[in-house]
Amino acid sequence: MTDQAMTHDEHEAHVHPPYMRVFAMLATLTLIELFIPPLIGDTLWLSATLLILIAIWKMKLITGYFMHLAFDARILLVIAAVPVMLASILVSVCLMEWT
Image 1 (cartoon, rainbow, N blue to C red):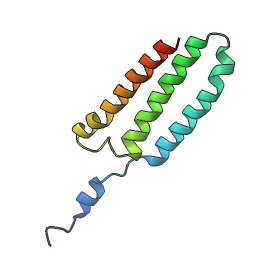
Image 2: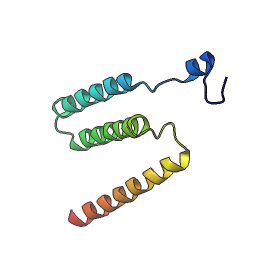
Image 3: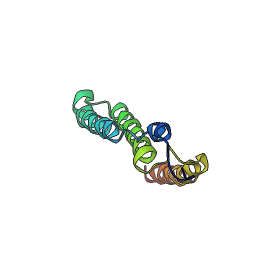
C-alpha cells in the first residue's frame, strides 16, 4: 500500500462539516430576526441589541463553516477578526459624531 492510500479507518475518521445543520440554523435565526421587531415593540434598544447579537451569531456560523475558518489555524481567525473589529470601531465613532 502506498503512502497516499487511505485505510478504511482513516477514511471513516474524515468527517464532513455539518453544512445542512448550519443552513437550518441560519434559516431559523433569520426567521427569529423577522419576528423580533413586531414582538418587542417600542423598546428600540432591546430590538437592536438582539438583532445585532443574532447577526454576530450568524456571522460566526458562516465564517466558521462556509469559509472553513473553524478547521484552519487560529491565526487565520485573528487575521479575519481584526478588520471586523476595526470596522466596528469606525462605525461606532461615526455614529457618535452623527448623533
